[in-house]
Image (cartoon, rainbow, N blue to C red; front, side, top):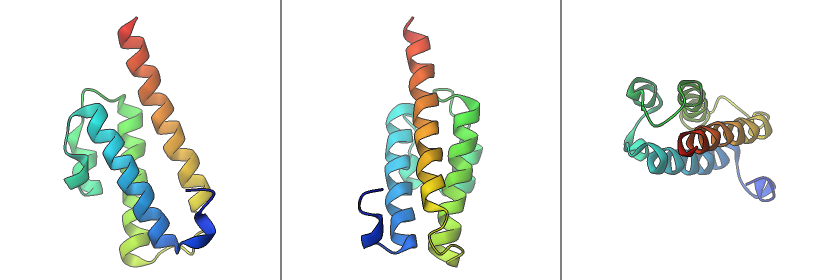
Length: 101
């Protein structure tokens, strides 16, 4: 997404980021994140995800919904959103590795 960011409007970038994050979370938690709103994602409390990663993911999805549907961002939040999504993935992957030890 970072390399193609200039080609998309902020709401399109947020849609792509949200879709990717939802697909990843669904695969890791076995919950239908693709169908969840941010509010539903927050209420899901998946046991397969670290609580702080699930909370941060719900926050990020809520921010994405605000941008996509309320047009609340002109794109300034995209770099930080990408970093936050990487932090979520790292946290989930570290927790998965810890379970395998």
